[in-house]
Image (cartoon, each protein chain N blue to C red):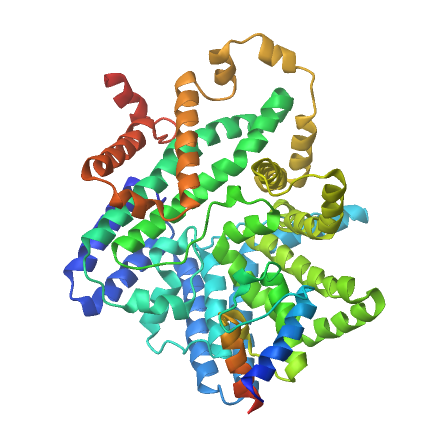
Length: 80
Length: 515
């Protein structure tokens, strides 16, 4: 799967979880850039991403992931 | 060994001096020896040695075994569970036996059974609630592959018992701290100055502010029936400030000593009273405890199969928006209950620092859409200073209310205090007969205390306001030498002259009279 396609699908997940159609995620996007992305919503986001891509993050990744770019790297490594 | 005691000051000076004298390779051994002395200084007996060994040996060996069997998830999980079980069993036995006994007594009363369990006295080691959780985190991190197990048992012992954090935290994580604890540190003039200023600031907060507020708050709490209304409300409103200056002051001393040695630890407070919601408040208050519970309880719970199934069911029944919140609230309730329990084996802590905090955060979340609608309808501008101020004050008041339970000796004591806030009789007598001096004497302070306290709180306010915009010490060190030294001397003299050094020992008073 191309990176672009992953970002496209991630955009939909983010828009769905945070109820904001205007969200466009980039590799450097962090929790500070999206108003509702706090520690409570973080876990909902993780589960939604897992369901979208049919993968599982381990707890280490859940707690240490710094931005969307890192998330995408993990998704790619899991899907290959 | 209290952090503000002379013994601790001497102990720290000797430790730091030896730390920089010995070859860098064995610096960590100096820390280990100091930590062992600190751990058993007040409480050396067979019982406490066994307690320390139980935690050390279970976390060391289980950690090694989890690491060894990391390819075999069943075996490594079994050792993780064993390690957590051993550490938790001891913690529950030492800290929560009386909570179970008092619950059993309540149940006996409820069913009219004529039997009361006698409470037990447990002699537990200092900091056991801290390093029990720290070592559980260590085991979980090895299991999750965040870090590798420490092969040297003495280094593992240092991670468990690093002396500055034993009395008030912060919670450390092995992966983030191992380099700091076992690493080689050169003496740095810059670190020394920065560390010393932080220690002084901590002493100022504790000795000048916290202890002084304590004199007033303790006097009122000791006799709620006599004080009532205005006085109880004042004591309730000042208690969070007393707690904050005491707790964050201790953290400043801990961080300052560590910084002196070049050891960086995670921050535990970032100007919590500037928060405009309870959610934000808890992101800035006791940060490392919140992060611990989030990573080791809340996230695993939310990701568990049970919660995911519940999530799906709730979404089907209540719709997506409401449905996804229900499992979230359940996990939050469990996490807040755990926070309450961690604070101590009494219902007052479970209610005050657990369930009430959950209730406020829950209500904030549930009522947010309603409050947005009301604000829109009434045309209230929420982007202005006055609105933020209102929310900040509201957050402070909610926290103060919850802390009534935290401060009270029992749940009925807390309810008495709440009642006492609304008892207006007798207030005329207390207020009317006095001038300011008598009034202050009535509440355990004198005019000098009142002036010092007002000034000190004003200084705290300014420093906290500056801290919102960045590191205050860095700003201070950029100033000219005259200003820097003036600030330092003022701080030192304020601590010596205006510090409260406990009943019967008042050097502050003595020095003050000489002037």
